[in-house]
Image 1 (cartoon, rainbow, N blue to C red):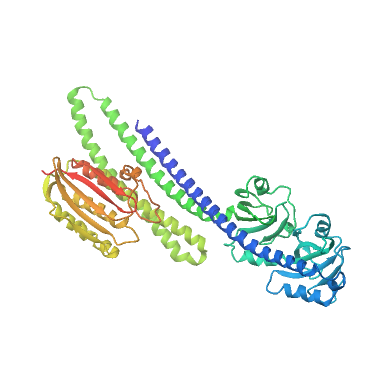
Image 2 (tube, rainbow, N blue to C red; image 1 turned 90 degrees about the vertical axis):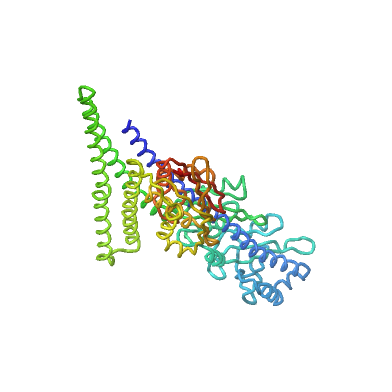
Length: 550
């Protein structure tokens, strides 16, 4: 039975740690997906405003030239100045040009007269000649005017009767969007893409040459885009990295913004935390297994001795002898837990400190961080051994039933907590007269110190802590209460907090082993009372416990 119980405890501890790591993993994933969604909203708005300014310039040039004499005024100095002036204040447009129906450039903003460069082979020129009116966004091309990666925003150049006179083209360097996106990129491992809705990649920051202008065979978001304009997922990107991504399609233009983060970069802090927790779990399991083995050996020894006894007198005598031996073994076990088991932990901590002191210069930041994890694990394991020892000692024998003044016990507890009270600037109030009760003075002092210490530890950061202590007479004895204005406890955790090694908060926020309230409950129950809590999250908690009056 004990072996089964021990195995169940070990499996439960493993399951708890695995669940804790999985919860941390899901939290990291959800946090980064929310961050990606916020970034996509911002990037889509910025990109939309930039492209809208280009759209307005093209419309304005078309309107200005529509009623001009063609082709004379289209090729003159006035047209050159018009193009140059319309670019003023629009930094993303690098060049603005008029192209005839024969595909030859006949006016631009850069020089007059314009160089007669042919763009007949460009896809955007053919698209403008063959489709309806409206702005077209080309795939990235190497510009012939400035020899840089550019994508062209173009629309038809129409006459007053709607006849096609050519194409207006605005060259936008991909570098403009690179600069725009680099300003909001959180750090290494992150990337931002700008796609056309047909899957053609316009730009990517940081740049990867093989992606510019690519039309991928399979891109994870393209299938989702047909269903919803906003979405998220995880897949291997064009840079062959496992990425968590989110996308947002723009409403006015046929473009999609995609933001992603390299999963290995995103999960690096989680992996370090998981490694540290795994080390702590291994130490905890080793101690737990050792304790189960010791208990099993003790039980088997007692059973073997009891089976060998012949009659009732010999069984009684042997039982008394076994009881004395068991008490001696428990005392020996207590010594092992407090000394022999702690000694290797102290040695581990001492040598880790020595390694840090002598070889610190040989370690990088990650190595020093790993040393700190190991030292912290040894210290926490030592603290857990002490807490387990204190927990096991409660109830061994009967408590002294002396009448003690609970007011004096509270004063003693506050004296022990004076530094914590001063640091937290807490206000402690004792309501009325605290009565005398029957109990063990040392154990009850630790009880008050534990509960008052928790009130100071789990205080609300937005206000100084206030602790109120009092007692009321009840038929079964005295009912004490300790009320605070701290962070409070959710109702579903009322029973869980009194269970050994149960924590509601990560160790990074609040120190401790999760055994304090378990010790408090065992102390109260050993005195013949009971303990419970009432709380409202965000407003505070009140712990109640009863003690006999005599």
